[in-house]
Length: 148
Image (cartoon, rainbow, N blue to C red; front, side):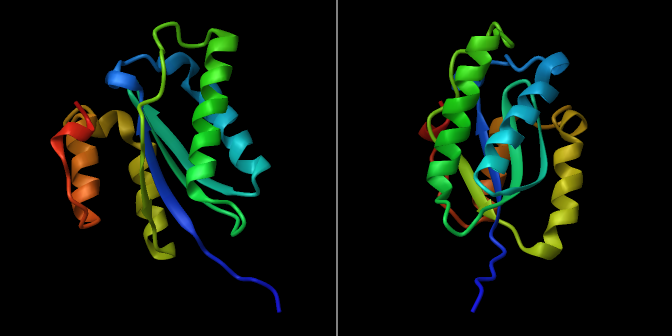
């Protein structure tokens, strides 16, 4: 019998210290690079986006891929690519940790729109407020020292 899965995650992580180093002019190059990492691991990217200090990824995972391994690979490979290509001069590292929230299939279209409109969204709300809201909506306990 074949295996059927629909494992979709909304993954969010920021730059270390939330330094606004992801310049808009080269962000699409970063997103294409991350998409390549996901594709190599047999994932399906629904949408990727963000602003100067963080990235949102909406992706499905192949059942043989552990979430923590994928995120580690994305962060490690993209950090090396950023440094090697000298894409974002102010970029130092990605923050330690990440947020990953499961997404139902019927919620994907609204989340895709949300990720598409990050620039407008962050004109009103910063990353910490946004991330805290995601954590609390998932009924997880927020700790202020997670994002100093």
